[in-house]
Image (cartoon, rainbow, N blue to C red):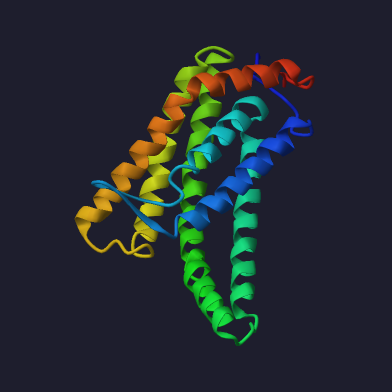
Length: 223
């Protein structure tokens, strides 16, 4: 029975994609601790960066398969958790007692202290969203093999980002100061709409990157 083609995650490209995705997730979690008001729209400081994590996830899933994508999600989960532990250690370490250092220590505690709640929200959202995203990508490729890549990207992105955003916003909203139902709905709809629109906008680039890696990936073959 014919099977869809995937490459070995032992290649030189997979670790680069995995690293970028993990770093983006960590930075997005830090940025998401800040509430942002852009005219009538409510969002957070990580809004411009997070779609890149899903783009990396799409590329990994399409080229290396669901197992490699799941590994990337787990690594991102573990490293984000490690970052939270490090932040708490930074905050708890005794600092200098001069006026500037006390102000710096307080600012660090205010900035990084709540990040663990953002990370929990981000991890659960990313876990649910990326698993959904990868599942749709893989099953779409089983049906269509190398064809209809754009359709796979659009469908997986739409569903995955909605799942991610609803989970994330439900937990993170109170952390960044959102208190009303109207603000929450604004935050959730803007978040999902922006992420989906951003990924749709770069699909022409994503497809070219995927095609370029497939051509240069010697292990890309039928499994």
